[in-house]
Image (cartoon, rainbow, N blue to C red; front, side):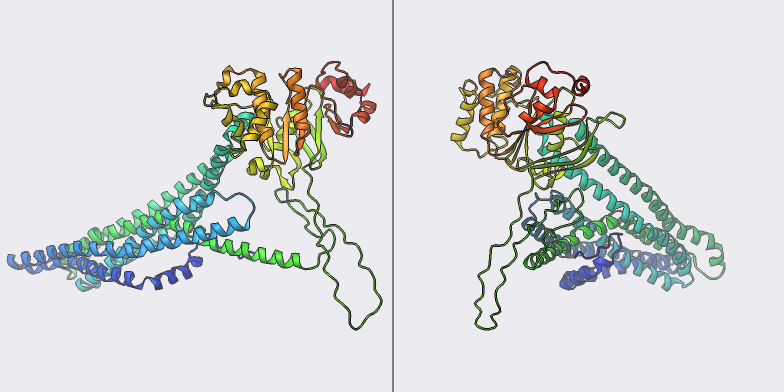
Amino acid sequence: MTRPRHTDGAPSPLLRPALSFARRRKGPLGALGAWSLLESARTFLTGYAVARALDDGFLAGDVRTGLLWLLALAAAALAGGFADAGVFRALGGVIEPLRDSLVRRVVRATLTRAVASPTPADTARVSRLTAQTEIARDAAGGVLLTVRSFLFTSAGAFTGLAALSPRLLPLVLIPLAAGLALFAATLRPMAARQRDLLDADEHLAAFAGRTDHAARDIAATGAAPLVTAEAAPLITAEATAASALARWSAVRVTALGLAAHLPVATLLLAAPTLLSTGLTPGELLAALTYVTTALLPAVNALLTALGAAGSRLLVVLHRLLGEEADAADVREEQAHALRVDDGPRAPGAWSKGKADDEVPAIPAPSLPPEPVHGPEPFHAEPSPPGPRPTRPAPPAATLRGVTFAYGPDAAPVLDHLDLTVEPGEHLLVVGPSGAGKSTLLALLAGTAHPRHGQIHLAGHTARHARTLGTAARVLVPQEPYIFEAPLHDNLTYLTPDAPAPRITEAIDTFTLAPLAADPARPLRPDHLTPSERRRIALARAWLTPTPLLLLDEPTAHLDAGARAATELAFASHPATVITVSHHFPAPEPGQRVLLLDGATPYLGTHASLLRESALYGELAAGQGEPSAVESRSTAST
């Protein structure tokens, strides 16, 4: 089972790992605190030395005392510079181990998932390992540095104000606390908006990676408009998240302004009263010095760091530290699945209620009844274990209630189509132009998506099968993509490790020897004939070890000899082959044919369709190629 996750940006899930890390880094954290005490002393002298130099020195006519206090202030500044160097040295001893720890966690979780899951590696985890661990390192360093500076600077400033006059403390603390409270109210929404932005950025980056990997297929199948349509909502989501984050950033700037300017205004407004009740000019000037040169820069740095780097750090740490928990969930689910698999299971009880993006349920075969033996209470020999039941292979392709139309108001090209293609079957799809033959292949290839219905390839949804590449299917479109490279590269880019004898056989089968005369010479696609481009694409698909071949007009532009060689080559191919063709090849005995006629699809053998469909008989006899609209009237006569 999956453990609950805190995803609202609250720091509570991070408290335990943070404390554990701090306990392991006591030495560097102690050195950081020790160097920071010098910063507190420098801050204390910043205001106190000004008050003493003015009241006890210059205003009292004692120039020597005033200069001595100013010299003490200069010495404190020098000591503060020395302390800053020590602070940064100690900071590196904390932040670099933090980064190393995060990288180890992400690598461990990624490897666990890669071993446990048969699906391709999640490219978003590469972003976590590179970009987000660096974000965590930089943000953690900035937050730790500014929080430390604020705490020790505030301690020095408030100690100085109390030493000058306790009446000054509420005049500074109350307005400062009001600004900090308003700022604190923005932390949770800022973290949530930052998380939304990171989510949108990861989804867009993952989509861009898949698109880049499939660029040639997209160009070859003409799927660019579909890819653009898929990218649009991802881009919009990232822009919306960025706008929401910007609005909350404006609220944070308002809080920053209040915390920065209200203490100064309060001191100035109260100055006449303070001076008339015994506060000296030097003490008032020292209070303003504390506020303007120590507290306000520290507050400004704190709010800026927490508002930007802090919220980003919380979100990134939630994601990075959640990797191990997610990996633990995977291990637990695997163990649970193994326990369930080892136990008894009723027939048909493998899975129920799977969603469209999950592998569909496949019932387990019923077991034969065990033979009944007579009662033998003693000396019974144990029976040898029988073979475990095996699940039948899922269909190569299934369509259930598939409807597709080119636009929200357009008539469906395919309307509630149901189809099952078994592994190893060679299905021929025929029909007039516009009946949906190429659309059917695009749906199976995952380059088009149905308006309604479900499509599965060997148990995977068509969307998921698209991410598996040639391990799920290979499509040869009507306009195949040939790139400017040698023939060998064009033939093997889907199968880079194809053996040389197999490549030679493909060249001979598809009559490509003239293009292979100079193996190093790049092909010029614009100089190739349509027949040559077609034969290169067919040889490429024939070479690829894929379970499903989708061939759209494979023999278009081919002469009779090349057409016969192509039909013979794919007839003996071990893959499941779905062929769309205007040219009417002679179906094999018993081979199923799907007739798409723009109204009611027909599925049967060549002989049965000749009896049931006048349109099929017309196509088989070569009496022309009516349009999908004309076919409706032809089929109804």
